[in-house]
Amino acid sequence: MKTPKKPIPRDIYYYQYLKKTLKSTKKIGEQETKEIFLKALRDYFAVQINLRTVSEVATQLYYEFTKPFDIETKFKPDLAKALSDATEVDWYHDHQKDNPATKKMYQSFFKTIKDYYEENKHSLKKTSNGKE
Image (cartoon, helix red, strand yellow):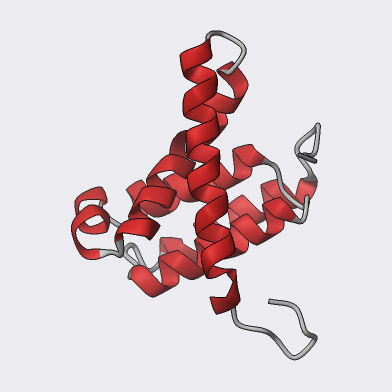
């Protein structure tokens, strides 16, 4: 798996952009959450942002712009699970060498996230320049 070694300036920009853009709305719905999350995953799998940024974006979506209870009870279960796992995947990635249970959790979380992306990436809208 390819991943940037150092935070890319785009990581910082992306995260700040997300906070700035969504700050005024305070709460977003399932479709907006899904779209932002999928875009972050797309950028991660294209090695444009790192796993820490994916976790930060997921954390903002899960805890700041939506309520965890609403996500767990009103959103589609696959989105709720992938988003929840994404909030913690970076920590497990960083600590997977500590013990086998931590490594297993990382692998499980990462698989959930990757499977979600693969099953839903087709729903990203294409722009006029062909990019999603």
